[in-house]
Image (cartoon, rainbow, N blue to C red; front, side):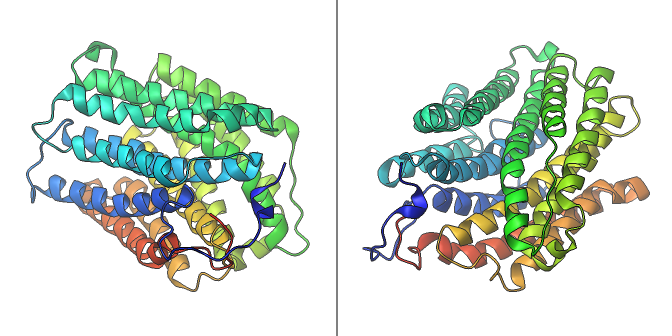
Length: 402
C-alpha cells in the first residue's frame, strides 16, 4: 500500500492549504488557544475580567487546557500521523474543517454565560467521538494492531470529559467526578504521549545524531505501559490514594529507565533543539509521575504535581512535536528552526520550573509565581504562532499534497 511519502509531486493549486491535512488547522488552533486561554485565565484570576460561563474559574482553566489545547494537539497529530502509519485516507478539506469548527464551538460555548448546559455539554462532548469515528477505520484495519489503542485512549478521554460535565451539572458530586475526570484525562494524554514518544524519540535520535545508540528494552516498555495503566485505574477508583501513589512511583521509575535507554551516551541531542525539547518534556513527565507518587502519600501538594505533568511534560512535548511535525510535513528542513523556537522551548521550561518549584521555595508569593509562569507560557506560544502560522496556512514547499 502506498505511503504518504510516496505520493507524486504536484504543483499547489492554491496559496491557502489550512485544511490540506490535520496538523494544519489543529496545530494553529492549539497555538492560538494556548495564548488566549492562558491570557483569559490570568485576567479572570486577577479580576481584570469578570468570570462567567459554564464552569467556575479553576474548572474552566483545567478543562480548557486539557480538552481544549491538548485535545487539539492530539487531534492534529493523529489526523496526520495515521495517514503515514497506514497509508489510508484521513479527513481533509470539508470534513477536516467541520472537525475544527466543532472543536471551536466547544471552546466558545463554555464561556458563553447564557448558553444552556445541555448544549454546552453536548457540543463539547461530541468532538472526541467525532475524531475517533473519523479515524477508526485506518486505526482498526491498518497494518499495526497497536494503533487500535488510540481508539481506547480516545474513548477514555470521552469518558473523562463526561465525568467532568456530570459534575458541572450537579450529578454525582459526592463521588468527586470532576477530580476523577480531570486525572483520567491527564492519564489518557500521558498514555498517548508515551506511545507516540516511544516511536518518534528513538527514531529521531537515530536519524539526527551521528553514531547514536538507542537502547530499547521490551520489559521496560511493557512495565511502563502496565504501571501507567494501573495508575490511571487506581486514580479513577481511589483518587489521590496510596494505591495510585505506588503505581505512579513505579511508572515514573520505569519511564526514567526508558528515557535513559534512549539517551545513553547520545550527547549530540543537545545540538538539535527539535530533539532536546522532546527529551526535556519526557524528563518532566518522569519528574511529574515521581512527585505524583509522593503526593499519594501526602508528601507533595497535588496542584504542583499536576502542573509538573501538564505544563512541563505535556506542554514541552506537544510544543516540540508540533514544531517538528509542521516542518517535516510541509517539506522543510526539520533542523532549520533558527533561534526563535529554541528560545520558546527554553521559556516554556522556565515556566514549568516557576510554576512547580518556586512555590516550594516561597509560598508567600504564590500569585506572583502563577502570573510569571502564565506569562512565560504565553510568550512561548506567541513565538510558536508567529513562526508557524504562515507555514501552516501555505502549501508544502516541495509541491506534495498535505
